[in-house]
Image (cartoon, rainbow, N blue to C red; front, side, top):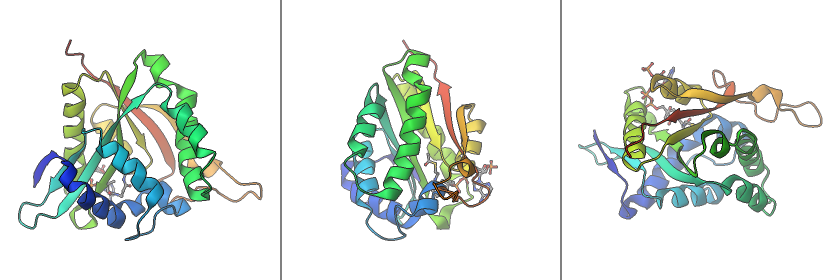
Length: 216
Ligand code: ACO
């Protein structure tokens, strides 16, 4: 397996990889924002903006040149969450509102910028491994390399919105701690129906962070 940065010439291939592999992400699978193999404009806009930050990393199978996995890493700046909540008001899409409403409201509440006194945070936003390459440590390696990139760029805080138990386990193994934990099953609509009916074992969304050593 070959690991490296994602050049703009590979952005289309990364989007293609995500169309076929990221719909398994527990929160997406529970609300149906993106369908397997289909374009998913709202999420792909976020993916491309994140790729343009130039901090993402991919794993490529050396023999077949297939993208085995990606970690899409972006920069979060103070005020981004509030701006995003404002922009959401004009987006008429229930699954999108449900996913980003949850992520944005939790992040607004915990205010990591204030708590850690930072003006930017390195966010591991998307971790995705091709189903043919799962269970071989690809995600762990992408995660580890992302942390190195964060340190090299002088970030003091790295954050993961870990919507899957597997990402929570990976984050924990790299010394991240839980900043906030919410149980999907606690969110119900007006009729008492679960809003996020995630499949077991993905019962919690956890915001996980790690303070990085300062190089300065
Ligand atoms: N059952 C139990 N534990 C698992 C499983 C599984 N099927 N898969 C991964 N894990 C856990 C284990 O703790 C494992 O560590 P260990 O082997 O040392 O115990 C750890 O995850 C890492 O395993 P990897 O082999 O590195 O993970 P993999 O390469 O298979 O990728 C991933 C995991 C990215 C979650 C993959 O299943 C995937 O792409 N899923 C769909 C998208 C998704 O849910 N992404 C994460 C959402 S959160 C976010 O993106 C920030």
